[in-house]
Length: 220
Image (cartoon, rainbow, N blue to C red; front, side, top):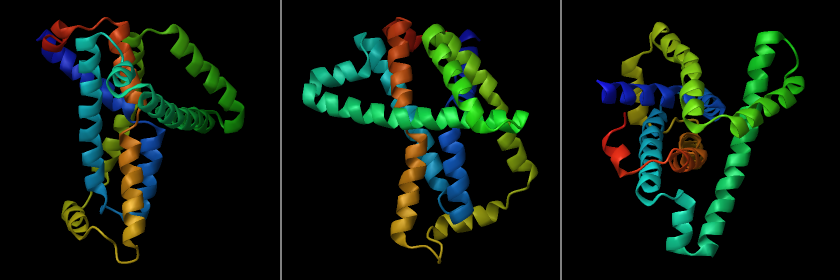
């Protein structure tokens, strides 16, 4: 029962903690332009990040070191530095988007312009990163993020046409779009799901919490 509860909490945390502003905006833009035809990318992206994050945690648990430290050891300092710099750049862009998303949410709640909320949101994020432990951050922010389940509820209440979903996925390319545009947005949608910060999160978090091989067999 304890293991089942731990798995359930992990799934809930993943829904609340990793469905971020990048996913919401990218999915909305792609959906408004391509309808259901790129829905398959969402499935591939979700499976990909699950495997990616899971393996990052495993590497840290087995080796006792963060993922990028292992990359430096196996591939050399140049490749590791290139990999780390690219990841940090993407993480910076993601963090900027997240802070902007918090500010926009606060604007909707208060009617105060979002630019006035940006420094407040940035300070709050910094305090969480600096003062909050990995387990608390993972569980609390993830469970609060379950408010996003409202999107799924609204989706089913709208009564989607499942037959149309299947038809558009099979058709793939809408008649008014080029193949280059289709695949550009497919890559963007995939990238919104598969982001490097989740590797940092699980890898460094596993080291901070002292995960070992025994934790892999017993998540509780």
